Each structure stands twice: as structure tokens, then as C-alpha cells.
Amino acid sequence: MTIDIYSTPQCGYCKQLKAVLTEKKIPFANHDVTVSEEDLAEMQNLTNGGMSVPVTVTDKGTPQQKVVVGYDDAAALLKL
Image 1 (tube, one colour):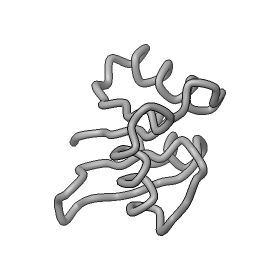
Image 2 (cartoon, rainbow, N blue to C red; image 1 turned 90 degrees about the vertical axis):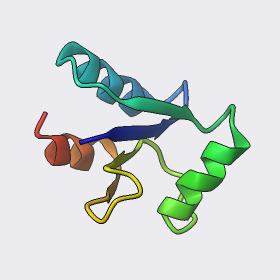
Image 3 (cartoon, rainbow, N blue to C red; image 1 turned 30 degrees about the vertical axis):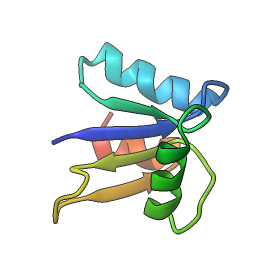
Image 4 (cartoon, rainbow, N blue to C red; image 1 turned 180 degrees about the vertical axis):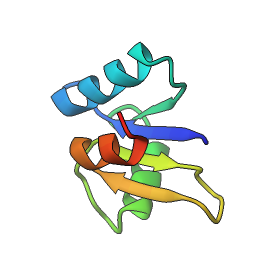
């Protein structure tokens, strides 16, 4: 499973999610939507224009892809 997280530096839930993943040694790719217009556009495309973070995507670009907005749902999806 691959994990991509769309986040902002000031988002507490984003920090919490990344800290838990790091603590559990679960690899992920972080996409800071405040730095990259491309990442912001990709996040909005994945969420039908949504601007809330964190957005967690598992298995991006595959038939198994799942997109979750928010910390609690991401934690449940990843069984943290």
C-alpha cells in the first residue's frame, strides 16, 4: 500500500497524522499544498474541489485507490 498525504504546515491534524505514521514506521509521501500549486490542484481534483486537510490517499492511481479527508477517518482507514 502506498500512502500520500496532502497537508499544510500549520495544520495540527496533519502534524498528528504524520507523527503517528512516522512513529509506526509507516512510509508516506507528504504533499505540502501551500508550496506546490500542482499538489494543491491534485488534492482539489481528488476531493472534488475540497480545501480541507489532511487528505490521505492510499494506492493512488490504482483501482484500489481510497481518498479520505480528515484525521479520524484517515486513522480508521490506516488502522492507527
